[in-house]
Image (cartoon, rainbow, N blue to C red; front, top):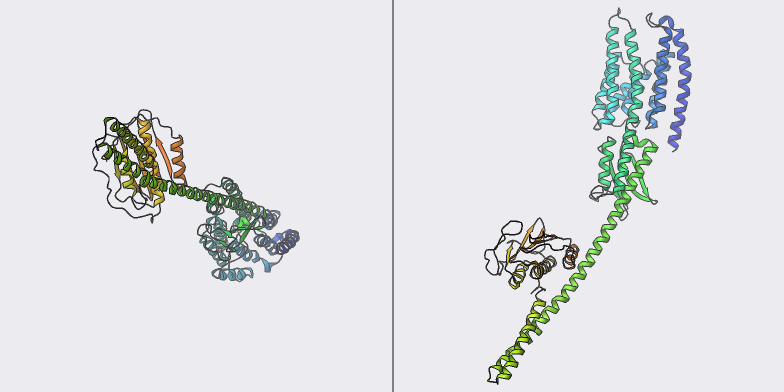
Length: 560
């Protein structure tokens, strides 16, 4: 702030000097009217002379951006007017103007490679360089400016340097022939200086307009906060619109207490360029590192700071929301795993205890019936055996919805084969040879398959069904289809429960069931590369031909 006040005081002092020198220049030009070419009126000559000096002073006031850059420009105007009063200062404006072009747009000359040009500009200001050498100086300044990696920043100093070099060469060439009038080169040079002054204002205002557009665009991005944009998307917008491809936005990492790359999280070193700090709720949030001249304007910097802060805040909210969602999914997965374990234990107990006891009771009764009891007793025994067989069948149907053994490492293939074999309609089974995953993923798909086959038996009225299992792109894909009546409700309680189960594992369920066209249930669930290895060949029964699917694709061979 103190430096800004000092720069403002210096600019005010130079402005006063410009006013004084303007008056002195007018008097000097009119006093020297006898030396003005006859074809150029003295009043016109004095007017052009003062107009050039005032043009640079007004350009410095109207321009945006760095105060140091504006001070160099107003100094150029004061030096031009001083040259009208003092013969020793006639080339002073050329040296200052060359430095102003080299320093554009931030008002500082960077790089040791430019020091020789600064020395040449100083020699020019001291009238130690001939006119052709001054033209060469401005031509070199144009080449150096054009070599910058930022075209938006390079356009003005390159064009101004090239224009001045061409005009000075034209004046030098005209001076080689004494019979030529010196008026055209003089007027051309003054017109070129007026064009440079006007171009300076336009060049500093153009990035400001781009910055305004960037602010509106980034505020829209921040308000939208779409996934995949955030801070990286904002950096691309700002870099393009401000003409600074090296612009970056570092995000504050509270844990490491440093600024970090928003994509990799790697710590960022201290900024070597200008940095615009962006606080949020009184704490560091982000840092914009750029050399764009538009950021030197307080209004533009404040707007960009607001847009970046909004984007960072939205990104933090989105990340917090994603963490909460993942915590809920993890909690649901734990609940489902616990319920599955309890169901498996109950199914195992029914298989080993209840069904076995019923089978033993039935065998014992059949043995008594074979022992020669009377007809009435045999009838009672046969009725009891039939009742026990029905009860055992009911229990088997209940436990049939649970996996017959622990799943994982490809054991789902055999479990699906068992479901197909128990189905009341012929079911074909096609399993990818490399199909294998962890227990969690295979268990989720088992229950989808079980529920889908139950729906086929109860509601589809199908004559055939099929099961496909494959692994592609890091996902397990299960497809259960039939050739029944179709028209299934994808939002029914059974299918919705399966969809919720899959969602807990990052999967999804889709149901295609046109009326009269059969039903296809497709379940996908993500797996990691470490989720098991391919299991051995399936022990499902040998397949046989099956009819086409509702979509027209032939199903795999049947397992029943």
